[in-house]
Image 1 (cartoon, rainbow, N blue to C red):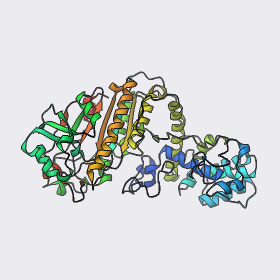
Image 2: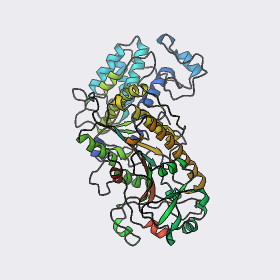
Image 3: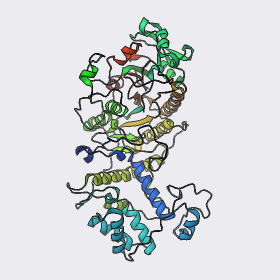
Image 4: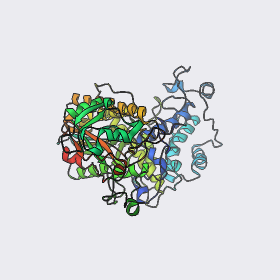
Length: 563
């Protein structure tokens, strides 16, 4: 999972590791081509996958220097630190769970490369790539090292990583220039996506002084076995006009409750996406096929693009914010610690970091030569008629190497003081806090971050599962806010949480809830005008929940905290 993004029998959801209709930004999107695997092809995964393959070629199937194999902690000999300690084939057979014993027929550089070209790329290796590989073999100490170097380098090429015919052109890809020192005050936007459709009617619950159709009694009657007992709710005042004067926050969120009372957090009720006011009588006639209201993938796309009429095709609301800020002179970065998301897609490149491992360095074997420049040359610029899948790979590895150099240097230079929970979301918010602390080193003035929490699609036994996940959100949020206050930057950070849709108010026969429309989400930040519920909390009856007029809350962030 950490290396390839695909652990056997451990898919992150019922939709497997990637969606069949996923299209990454860039040339594939422009050509209307699908590339499902690109959904997990982030910078960390590109480098960790290559390093795992390098390790296999060098040591066999062990975990030395990013290898895919079992732990080498108690191996004897241990992973070699110097070239003089390199394992010979006899050692590999003893220690590794398999190794590459490929014996080429060829005995010189040109023939070795040609043989690998036929075997691994079906003879599609470009002439420039062939020359680079031959030179690498010729500069090696001996035949064995030359073979290993050729094998390692050829698997980094677009010809190997795709079935495209690659047509190279002269020159080099443009590299990012060094940024000037920032001149504007820093601010950050952190988007937390609860993937699966969170049951947010058990997060904010009608409590007291309510109208008849939105009372706690009505809520408890409709929700039945999934209703939160009244004694498990922390009471908040709605402040502005709502169907209830008081609501209850699930007591699995004690810190979010504290932030609300400190006026550092607010809730937005009835959030979702529609094309126009819609009810039970017209939604299927007018909108069926345009807004797929109950499909995870479509609603995630709609909620992250916020472009239901496709006026800005192929972009997310976060990506458009980045582009707008850059156009008016802000040095702005888009960074994801939660994998690929349409939220950040726009004109600017997105940096991806693994929340636990960051971004690995390419070829981390201590005695191995630095192959970065060769890999960059192998993935140089291409002609317009060149294969688009190969071009997409080449762009991705260029960005991965650029991100690795930039972010590893920055992250190594600072440390966090706050302890974060070792959970899926906790690790992501720790990574974001770490990145925020590097803001001056990275010379940025605006950051947009994307994080996710998984497992919210609870069609069965929603009670304990929801409590556990809410607890993880609350603990991660507490650590993050504590760190932001320690960095004296809480007033310049906005957190907003969302999910692709809400859940039915009535439970199903499995003690869970099913896909519905609107949800209730929170925003938090030092300058947020908190302690209130924006929007209108929906009528708690099932029909009105399913067919209420919904709102999109992303635009509210600009009104609450100028960005």
